Length: 275
Length: 320
Image 1 (cartoon, each protein chain N blue to C red):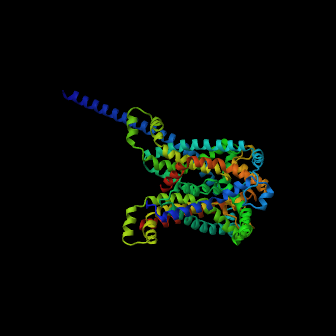
Image 2 (spheres, each protein chain N blue to C red):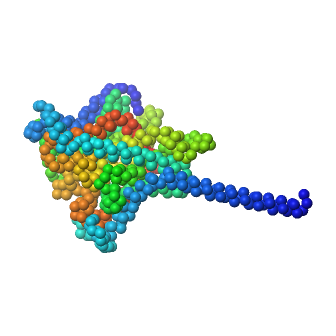
């Protein structure tokens, strides 16, 4: 990378800024029109609002029961992450520390499943889920995310465990530490960087997930944010003023999450993908 | 020692040896068992959830694809290959979906990677606003496909119309989601918008791994920017291309959320992806047997595409 700031770099800078503005224009449209009245949107969607109708937001907030939807999304995302971090890190560590045919086959088995499209699994899963009693419930959905999230999480942990020096574990074992002790007290804290990556990637996927919750969560009060926003949109089709407010409410939490953690997110994606 | 005592001692010694050998064997078995139990304890939970949620349903799906199950009744009738035959001979909508999804995949993959790579090249220079730009280009990827599709539905239907009215540019006055041709490009545009930032991040990481001294040396030898790019940079970051193409191909082919919210498969099912087709077959037509058969074919195609792609690009990597 050329680190001299020349005239050419300045031109590129301007181009970059213009591109970025162009890229983000849809957000302008959505925000600006979410506080307009319906008629005003029809007249000119590109214009700055004449007055700010925050009542759109109030109405939408109540109709879709935003706090409830937010809570559902939060519970699902947090507990799915918790479970995935625990079971994936444990499995990956044991597999790396137990080299041999079994671990190798299991690893390939886990990773190759990432190719299976959701559609191939969803129909029988609904049937099986009904039999096991895990449909139409948030805990049930969380258990399903465990099953779907293991391949990627395990893959990421697997690559990272190799950076933990085995000497530390061996000296702990000599000191009388059990396997569980070695893992939880010594190895897991050292896995923090990849845990951050795993949590971020899982959160982005689970929070925004649509089809699985749609199939699993039947009751309206169990709905997550994507489900609530989409059912609202379907009900109030073409009522752009409220629809857009619903969209803004829907995307704000995840954007805030991203802005707070962006350095980690971007670092994690780059690192995880290269592996 | 006299002869008898010698024999006795020898026998006793053998017995002691035997016993200690037995003891060692017993201890080893105990340790192996303990190791096996620990292995199961650590790997078991992940394996269990994985099997129950993905693998068992997968094989159930294979089974159901040979039946005429409607999803509710408790009787399941075996029909052999009838579902598969139906798909290949009578189901025109499935082939239309397939054709659309394949066309879409090619367009989306090429455009997304061009834009992503272009952004990466741009952001690999010493711009002051690099981090802000990187965030800006990445934000669309943070929003799920569903809400993204709704946003762009508004943009295409109302936003473009306003711009078209003000500026008079014909591009913005087309009925984007209303005609088959423009709807196709509409989805391509939105998908590219969503995914380019993600690809950009991967390409940036790869570009930063390129040794600057190589580029300097080539420049001294008189290479221009184009040669630098094609002969040096691209060959060095081929693994990034492998990953990005792998990701975009499988994401594009499996597209669902964005498709549902942006076009719903329309107009006239012209933008109906395979994923939507399968969903409708199962949950709207209630033909679960046929739906699972389609989903098995879907899986085979995705696996085939991604395998071919990874194999080809891996070969290029080795050659480079």
